Image 1: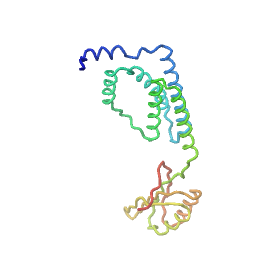
Image 2: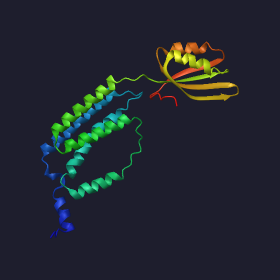
Image 3: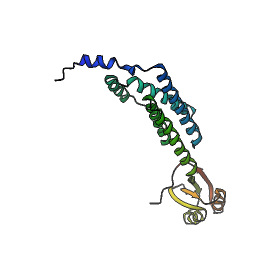
Image 4: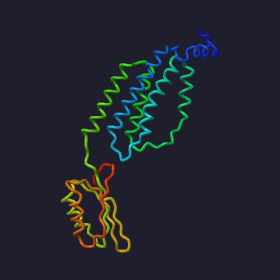
Length: 227
């Protein structure tokens, strides 16, 4: 019943490469994708909470939106090209590690906006970029967690029991991470969440005899419950 040869299928798909888009349609898609990429970059910059802001990653988000929209326009209506593009993308391996999971979400957001712009769904692109941007802004600014600290103590005496009392006084939550003894020197590491000023805690620790050094280091993490 179906007498369609492979050559005819290829010729049929080859004739629809790019779906014969007009220049105005292509420029509109690219400009809206560029606008969405700029909004994503602005939201990323305003909600960034790390130590070192990566401008290159922000620019990448803009370019990814535009490139994705061009790819979608190129493969629209072409089965053979779509399958070939999927095969080509499946062998790509990105070697640059993504340190923050939120960065991965922003990159996926850029790809999504590029796909939406590529098919010409302008209303969906504009509504989605505004809605997701507002959600990320609210989540980043309104939900604030207390920064945990690592407390490292070096002493020549065992003050484990005394330290627990001091930590209960100054910390809302604490958990011992490690303890070691070498050449009659003790090293204790606690993960703590402060009630007040960290300097008050360090001063009380220094009052104990045999304390050589006590250091508090802030880091990005969540305080686990003691096991």
